[in-house]
View 1 (cartoon, rainbow, N blue to C red):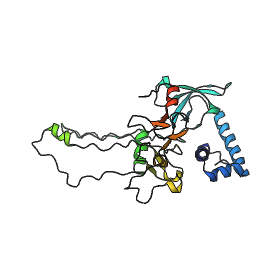
View 2: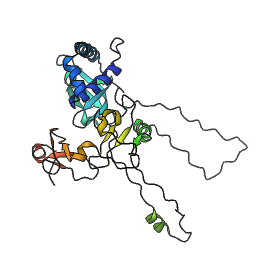
View 3: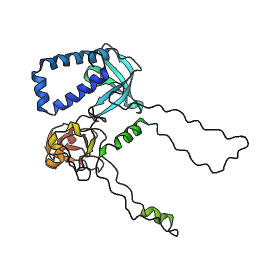
View 4: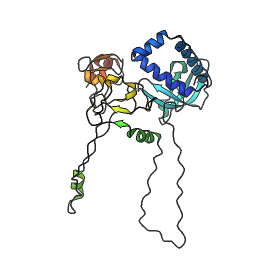
Length: 297
């Protein structure tokens, strides 16, 4: 990939290796510290990415990583200041007030759709015109709306590979009696459990695993998901995990990293979970007191 100048492939591998090394994987740390060929490869990777960044132009689309959100965003280059090696970017789908100035050398910036989902263009559906002697029914059956959103495509693609317990449908379900009112019918409907877990891996930060492994959901409080290939063997779900409850190592040990300072602490002693049921993040009280836009309930 380095020889071919394939920045997308090189970027994916580099990001994954950096993430695993930061997590303290012993094998990777030994490679980084003692393998001369690996260090040479790292130098070539840095030159390749720097060369690509130097060619970025106004109106180009790129992928930018947000450390605050732990997510990748597709962005458009609005302007460039070559003197300071900085640029102004507009995040696709966001209002202009969120446009940001950043220094290219200080941010994880890679070619567009390296980490974000590529938008799929669909062929327009041509509706056949009725013949002159053909009558058109007054009540038409509504046509299905095609989902063109890249986010919907991504979620549908991953849904089949997310492993978690799912409630079995009742076998004795019956239709409501004819005399029941609409209100009573609505009250009897059971809302399915919402899947609140993240759609990106809590280790590599990617939606799709580089090695193609499945995304498994932690069913405790952190609401995170993990590629099985990113986890150590001892922490991976067992063969019955499709039906049994699985907790990630952090939830089993009741220790989590503060989302602000990234330092680990004991749950409800050092770090405290956000009160929102839809949020699985933990924080130090001191970090919240020093932060902006956050408060302690």
